[in-house]
Picture (cartoon, rainbow, N blue to C red):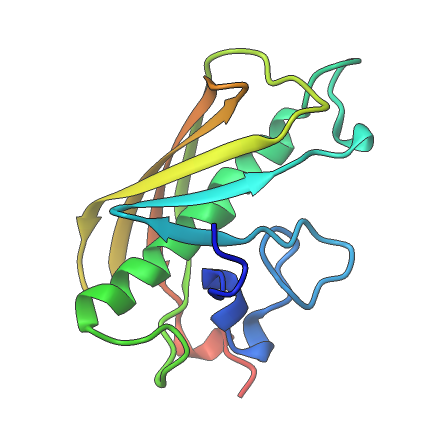
Length: 158
């Protein structure tokens, strides 16, 4: 990933950049950063020792959070792409979670970088469905499906 290219989450307006998972303005959050790699979105994240479930393994709630925020970011990026717009243009297209499903397929080890990959399976004006995986050491540990919906205007702090 090119550090000179802004992540999807870097383009979110300030009033919606406080999410624990993806908000760049939340100093206590995960601050994940997702980018396009062809038709897939990618995000690397290294869990901290306190993200433990049992010694040596990642807490499942963290995995769900990563899938959730990576997928909603992917939904926004896909909507901008479909509209032929840059992600920092107005009016903003920000998506929130309508549904989150996670399957844990293998224990996720602590102490290694996790790789998230996402791809769009459905794209409509107000709804985007994203499937994602979380891998450690090249092995898929979790799979997720997020139905992301365009954020209602009443949630904006404008």
